[in-house]
Length: 244
Length: 244
DNA sequence: CGAAACCTTGACAATGTTCAATCACTGTGG
DNA sequence: CCACAGTGATTGAACATTGTCAAGGTTTCG
Image (cartoon, rainbow over all chains, first blue to last red; front, side, top):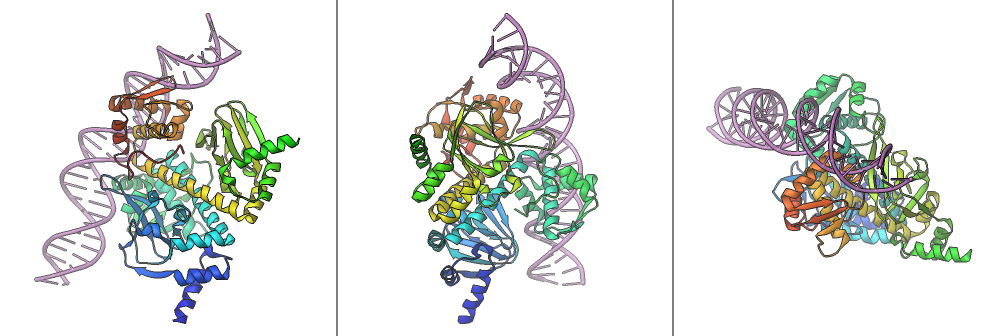
């Protein structure tokens, strides 16, 4: 039993949100955390659960969604490993924030009861600062996202997605990248229809020699791609966004 | 001189971000704050200034912008009285976050050096919590905004804007509202061209009897409007957003 | 009154969506 | 191992929405 707790502790310690927090905080987090594995396409958090749990992705990819009145599901976010969800409900468990979470690949996650997070943030100043940091980062990413939404065409969005993926996969600008999840989901995340996504890939081939086969993408001319994608943006290539 | 400081203090105390912070914090905020008035269409913060100042709008309307590579300006946000800008740079003075701020109407604002905010947040737990609260609220508003962006048509956006304005102006659903700033700016904020904005107003007239004359808007059938606007959203009327 | 800024309108181009048909890939059971 | 169903991806044609450009109308304010 002790072994399990030590292992949990060592994992909790690797989460940047918990850097430099007090030993007491670490201990409580460790004891209350649940470490779970799920198969691809499982329901991780239902509407209700998402209001009561903070979640950290240790491995794999998770999508957050809502269901619209006419039944379609809306992709709110796609989380990769080392990302988390639930800061927003620490101070304010607003039902507007209730999402559903599904695994997109096989995953490992850690969940922590939100009431505990609430207590700890109220008492551990360092934890509060860390959470603040994390939320501010998300806010910045979202602002960039909104900026992109209002400026870029669909084709530019997709190019942008690949450019960031390139950045993310390798510090040097790789020409060969791997799509992390299905095109259907990418299209939804970007906010267009799968058909439009397909056609955009064709355009990107003409523009920058971007070739897709299966889940592999080869970009012949990354500079050309970035000049097409980023020409209307306020920032210069490479975009310093991670996957958001 | 003492009178001025007392007045400043009393104003600082009304800002919800500073609720329940320590007396020492209040005192430092009061001494370091600058209370300014600007005429309509003035530059409030340049790119550089916006990285060094936290700003709170006491009265009037302010717009935050960036300039894109091809010279257009991009509206990042429109702030109303009691709103503030600068939490994002308290922990991370990232140049991506540098915006320019212009007054849209005559305004009164308070600025506080960001380095002071940084020190105070690091030491005053209550202040850190308040800032966290504020940032989380903004994050939620942005998530809703993104949801709307990806779901609604331009006409729906505009209808949504008016519905929220109705909510904001009066607790009861008023039928008569006043546009707070020029249509040009609304269009940019919503993310469409002025021409499209114009045409959308016509559609809204046909749908819900929405009439615009000058800066006055009369909505004959608010329920009809909300059913048109909100049919694809995950939330029901009335939308609990304030102006964001 | 008249200039400048703002708003509206029209015709057309560009972009994205819808719907239907087809193709390709995957996994299952015979 | 193959046939088959089911899912996901692509393509085409018609359609809807939004953007662009140009012209003309309105409001505001000196």
